Amino acid sequence: LSIFAAAPLLFILSACGPESTDTASPATGSAPAQTQAPKVQYMPAFAVIDLNVIAERLGSDQALLNALKQREAQYNQQLGQIREQLQTNLNERQQEFGEEATEEQKKELQALAQNMSQQFVEAQNAAQQKLNQEQNQLVQDFRNQIRPVAEEIALERGLTFILNRNDELLFSYDQRFDITGEVIKRMSTPLVP
Image (tube, rainbow, N blue to C red; front, top):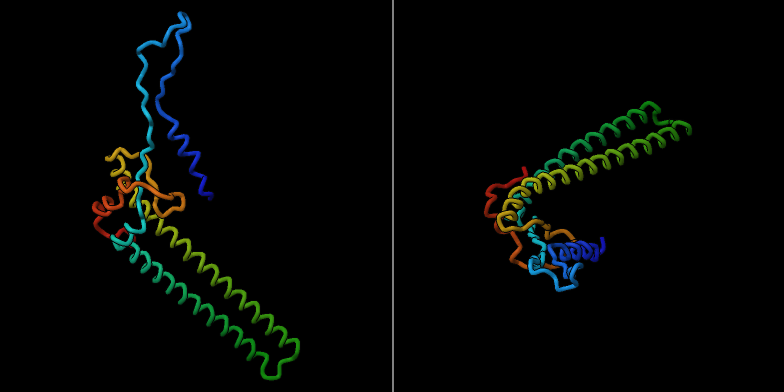
């Protein structure tokens, strides 16, 4: 995402709003009527929130890490069982062939070992993918729990947009629009299991 991607949006928002038109009266060619609406400059009302600070202060970051470590330990245990089962299968096949395995049997054992190694790598990849999905879901759940509180505060302050300070889109902002501290005050317990 380019740093300039937000520029058109800000330009459009700052160009919006009621404007008067200074046109002469077509019938008389005289000055415009005195009933023009006053010019009002529209200012976008952005709130800023720092989700990392909120998670840290509420203990949700540690709760999320603990949940992920627990799931990782479960996956590692399952992977250990898969590895043991694959090794047992390979050992049994070696015992069937005995000490004096033929060249064909040795090739078969080598192919079996490679196949089992590939199966284990696939199991590792699947476990990592599941762990990543669970992490993404936990983060999304955290955001969803914060959202209504942040929206309520922004509405109370007359702010219509909420930007996450942690996203790369936000370069700088006026601290008066940061609602992070208020969100923390209103949230009292860790949100992520």
